[in-house]
Image (cartoon, rainbow, N blue to C red; front, side):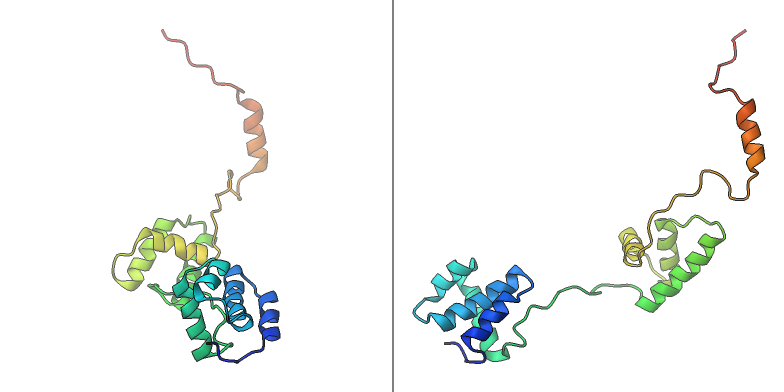
Length: 170
């Protein structure tokens, strides 16, 4: 038995506005239970491509929590973290200052910095996740020094052989 929180037309509209297949199936199960009460839970489960138990759970959720709490909510978020967001930002800011001075920042360097901050060992994956989460990406250093002399480089290129010839053995 379904509680009449919404009309069939309102549920139909919510089915059309569903942002994912999973949410559509949820509304479809409630729609079928309201529209055709002669259908059994097993038949509705077959139509929605879910198990019978899932349809029973969805029905209970709709009846007890109402239509506003029936919408799927993402499961993302920071469930397991070592540093808070502000502590991560402070750490990356200090690493940014080192990088601007010319120090090459690696994931291993980030791992060591985090370990120094928290006082215990952390997995290497945490450093990679921290960099990825804060949109740091792999940037290779320049192939030449930014303060190098361009004239000296071009003169060296002109006086150097194109290919290496090994010295003759005596």
